[in-house]
Length: 242
Image (cartoon, rainbow, N blue to C red; front, side):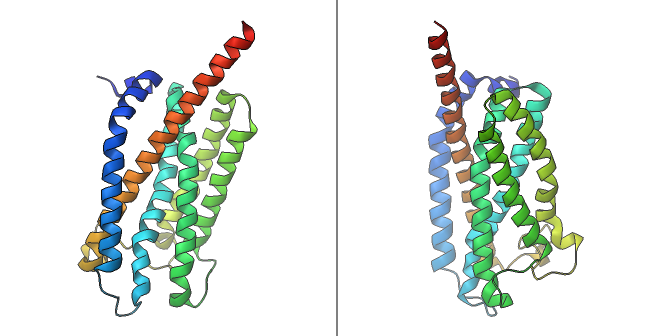
């Protein structure tokens, strides 16, 4: 069985209908369990106090803000190369979710940064690239809405997605590219010495899993909605021609 079978809208609708309840249930379990564990059963940090617990929202949302754009990039490349409509619709469906994750990351970062840095905002490389990424999300969504022909909209938004991927990359690796800046190093790393303490690390991993599953759930729901909307418009067009 080829993975490209799922580019068929009928096959995608059948498979996603089966998977959606399971993914949704796992997302709820991981999010509720991880957030309760993190906020109520972990100690305050010796430096940051209780403000450290915002890590359970800030870090997963920041990761998903970047990874949502990466998913859109992959889907856009599939559209450009193979012209599969489901991939274009999936990219369109993911954009508002990624934008929301970026906004959550910016707000929680400001709330976390104010007591640590003494300011709500700084033109730090990572913060600035994240703000630009948010603007790219806005532009991507606006471009889809501004163009009536769906294939033309998919083409232009795919190009925009390719350009915006530079800032998704900068958002992830800005701390490595520039040594200066207020933002700390990554909370999670392949190097165990750079990770947060285990007491925070384990619930954080569960929260990250919950955010990933939430993202998948919302993308499936929105992609299914986009496919139904496309079918409805096609039926309306046929009725007008009849």
